[in-house]
Length: 336
Image: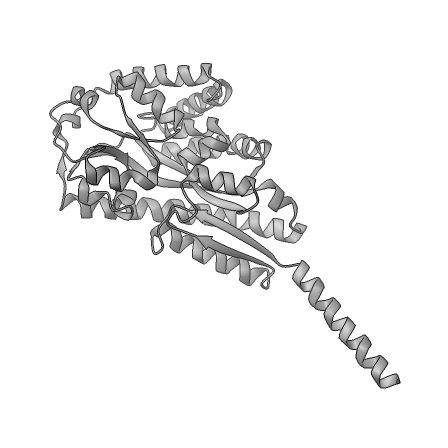
């Protein structure tokens, strides 16, 4: 009788320990448009392994790469419904959470990556607070690369862009404001339909990074590329505040502490591979000669017009925009 009772107590103890262990295990379901095997997914896979190892398996990441969870607005909808808990987003997705952050990818605002790094470091606390206020935890900042024009047709001068079928990411108010300021009439499509659009002629021009153009297989449809980038595309790694708040304090700290080195790796790898992609594309594309000598003064004026319109609509923050201007001016003075 005693042996039977002892066995029963041991079994209950084991069941209890298993239940506690199961309750203390967390799975972060994480979506991204980045294709499997891409620069970004390699970094994310390594990050997932790091989280699992440092948490002794208590925090693991299940990745959904290559847009299998849909476009970025679809990912964010699934996060709201609890089907996903995190995502890696480009500027479009970032704008769905905290639009003022998109000031960092304003066309022709920054001269080089050093300026971007200096200004971003100064406004990062405001970005962090903005994401948190809108129910997301900002884990890492990232980039998607320098943005160029790619087209299936040659371009004699910038005025021809008004007659082009330029792809615009569906629902992207930020890029829409700049297209309108330039007098362009884009074709609005989800990013998952761009390849088909290029194949059928529905669109003939896209704005993209060299790295993304190759990863998304758009490069084979666009043999002409502008040599001068117009901006650097931003991105972010986020998790829902609900998921983050449900983690024990040590796992919250682990998630945040791995964020900074992940950000550094993502940005460094993207910049390196963007240059490699440019070298690859140089062998298969021709320059868009009509965009080789852009009037920067004119473009800056048009950019300011678009930014003012977005401030008036409440999409961008006048306060953050002024801070960016001030920090950029300070950096340039110090550099001189």
